Length: 366
Image (cartoon, rainbow, N blue to C red):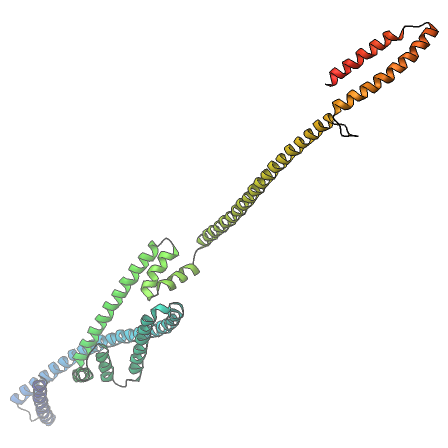
């Protein structure tokens, strides 16, 4: 197709050169005034052809200007896409730095996930190596070869694809490729915008920081522990107050539990002391009963025996009674003699009354 266009262009150039040489000859003859009607008609035809060709060239130039403006617009869009891609790369680098920090945290916190952390570290190293190769690429062909290898092609296939892409870098192919890449970038941006809107809807629907960071953790690849720490670090004042009240209530419950335990221990000790006191009181009651019995026995023994001589009190009382009666008889005899001398009551009556009183006293005592 290119060869045919080149042949047509060469023929047109030859025809234009011949026509202009003929036009120069005719104009020189016109200046000398020796032109014929046939030559004048030919001159007019050449002039009309030149005018038509000039008009065609003007239209083509305007078309080229429009194409140039369109190409410039596409180039501006491609530059904007490249700038945005550079910004995305900067964000990716920031995310890589953050991923390194998160990986370090995951390695320190979750020792049981060493394999997963090693896999993330390997992916990070491969991503860094890929970005380093992209930065060191000198031509677009090298960039395409690196991208092909990243997409899973072998180095030979990636080089062949890059060579084919470089061979196809004509103006139309470049414009078509730029349009395709622009469409891909737009589709990717649309998908990213859709994902961002979906994530924003889930974030808006979240009621707690835990729900919020569950979605954000899945978006940024956080582990469950990291998402939980972020949620706890960004809790609202109400949640923190509620948690503080819950912790305070738990602490008070633990304190009351300890107090109840101490009170229960005290009650048990008091019950044990009361049991011991009751047993001691029972022993003292037994000792008191035994002592009372001993006292009563001692009293009965005292009542039955004499304190001074130890003989039975009945025998001792009889002996005392006999002695007292003998002494009383002596006194009565003396009193009777005195009464006879004085002329008072006979002592025998007084003695009878005394004996009756003594007998009554003995009966009362027994």
